[in-house]
Amino acid sequence: MARAPVRPIPDDHTIIRYVSPARLRRDGDNNVVGVLPAAFSLRPNEAYLSAGWLDFYTGTRSERFAAAVNDYDASPLVVRETGGFAVGNVATIKAAGIRFGQAFRIVNEPKPKLDSYVAVRRYSSDELDLLALLADEAWADCISVAACRTAAPQ
Amino acid sequence: MTGTAVAPYAGGAPNPTFDFAKKWGIWDHILSPAGPALSQTAMGAAVPQALFVRSLNRQRQKQLAWRTVANDPLASRLAGRLFELKTLTAQFAMHLESEWRAGLFAQLDYLMCEENWEAVDPIPAPESYRTALRLIILLGHVKRPGLGFDIEGNIVLAWTEGADRLTIECRPNDVVRWIVSYTVDGERDSAAGKTKVARLPTVLAAFEPARWLALQ
Image 1 (cartoon, helix red, strand yellow):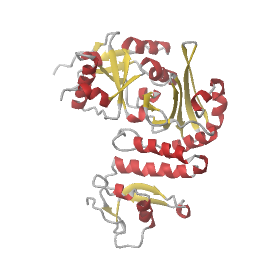
Image 2 (image 1 turned 90 degrees about the vertical axis):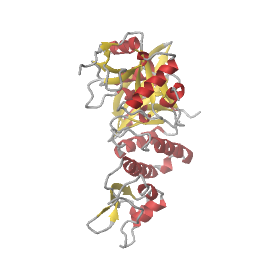
Image 3 (image 1 turned 45 degrees about the vertical axis):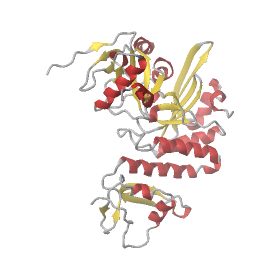
Image 4 (image 1 turned 135 degrees about the horizontal axis):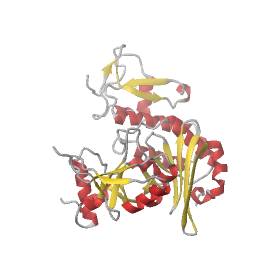
């Protein structure tokens, strides 16, 4: 079976990264106020940062979020209702990398049942300042998984 | 042998740890339908495997009780560790106001449950939590932080005032990684570093930490 083509994501497009409940930024009363820098850490066995291509889908913004969550549900990847998605613009994320000498390669690498899968390659999470820049500015918008479902077809 | 709600050490001598777990309300969780299965020990007693229960009772504080859970399910491991962290907190209780501590426990309860925990993440380390408690006590009466965990299971303390943020990753042996980000004249500035708990107040002093830490 032929492999799905790998293609770069346009700079003006939006990508999303699933953030587990433990890596959402909270206030002292447990309200979610963003994402933690640790949300952008690579695990020891990860060669790239995984994400999703929001603009792969069509429709309104909320419809695109709903479609993305539906695809995640059908794929082997697990997204929890209490988790969230960090939302960022490709050009802004690349610019953050450049500030730390990293030229990210952000590409669509379709996976089984998840055609919108994105890999952020040439990415190193060793720089704590970079993780903070992503979490606090470049990739800082956050939407809960539950909120993404509001536009999901019943 | 699959689990049914039978008392541990069935038919044997009274088990103080079982009584303790019942008292503190964790035994029902251990033996819940979704909980662990049971297996036979060399003593012939049905006990769950690999659940670590430390007694809060002062007289037994240094006694460690190991229970075995055949499948070692995530929920039981989290419950055991949560209990251990709360027990550790009790050692510092005199320094923490009850309401403050209750809010801390509520966050731990929320994050350390099967529904909110990623199975691939390591269970939070008591050594990291101990560092966090020592830091909180060193900082004095401060606003309660938001909690999180990094991919290594270290606890993360987060204080947020709009775009101004202080984040501290607590590692074992009093080591902390800190990050501050704030806005000056419309420009974002940030700094990060690694130090020991005792040095952190001095290191953060240049960033006017009261903006994050001061109680309202």
